[in-house]
Image (cartoon, one colour):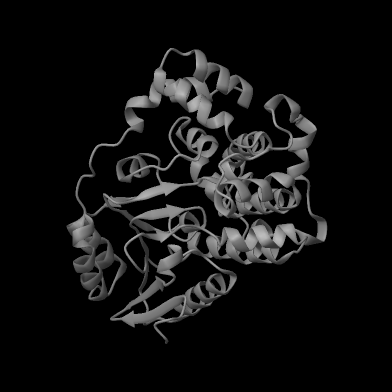
Length: 357
């Protein structure tokens, strides 16, 4: 193992420690990284000497800022298909994490966004700190929450998941715990000791007990106090009606939220709402990932993804020119096209791993 490798693997005691190792890019995921993690987990499943997996990010800025957006942007501009292959393997990895048979401990310290949520929040033991900033910000770049994100957000209490999906807002530790995106709060200064003690834990019960010894109450969050207006406004049938309710419910924060939403891609907003609501009806993470793959493949060919990344990441003018530009111009047929079956190109995770009683 070379310390310059993008993924570092080492086993200490009975724990396989996976370190995402691109700190200058906040450990953004590349296709080779996804493959390395998947191969490591497949091997760990078969290895009886490995009783748990721990995933962390190198550096001080975060576990993972998501996928390599610049690479996706260049691929989309060139009319390529590399990104579709990346998503295919990434979503398979997300599903593997979700059904991993041994404790999978994710340290969600610092920035955890997009693909970073995918390699952490499907795990069985998810740890946040006072530095955690967790988000699915895809609507701001003309994309739709993926990596199983709509599955996670659909399972959040009330309409909190819908709120986070449409706004792309980042949340801290307490709100991540409230929304079901994390399980335990551990102060960041105690992480090194936690990692050390996990290495000496030989059984799932010992792993859980070690985490419990370090866990404590998280500092207060924001969403619990906002549940009334969030649940009332986001229960509306359409994005237009959600925005109308936010603007007219009499809560200043809600009105500001409406402006946040209206700055996002209209097509991405309507497709995101449909995705989250459909995910509530689907039977498994695998079925949701199959749906997200269909949506991602269509979004990759639409102009808003390239334009959104250009405005936010490349030119940074923060002035995307969405097509179409208004919510009213996005029809039901436009949204339905994102969910059309892909025939022989389906991801097929739900078929490979059907839900059983």
